[in-house]
Image (cartoon, rainbow, N blue to C red; front, side, top):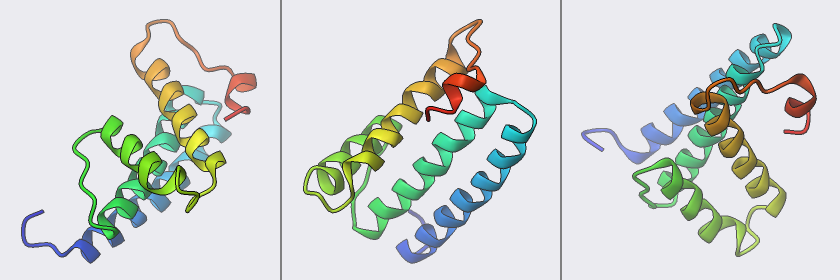
Length: 113
């Protein structure tokens, strides 16, 4: 993690999460659903990354981050299962919205996120 302390990384990632949520509001207002779900997922990803680093846990991929989050915080009941489910649903929707041709996350689908 170079010369940065873990506290610096945590602070930076939490700020990225907050900034990304602000972006999401603009995207929703403009009905840009695919991009909005992307930014919602990344806000969660940044926050979970901060949580993992704060607790001395390393994850080298998006899937690894989700796995560690589930194992260390959701399964033991430290964080409510609904948050883990929400994070996983955002991951799946972001994958489809970003990588599937002709996929359009309509407003009705988006509101279930």
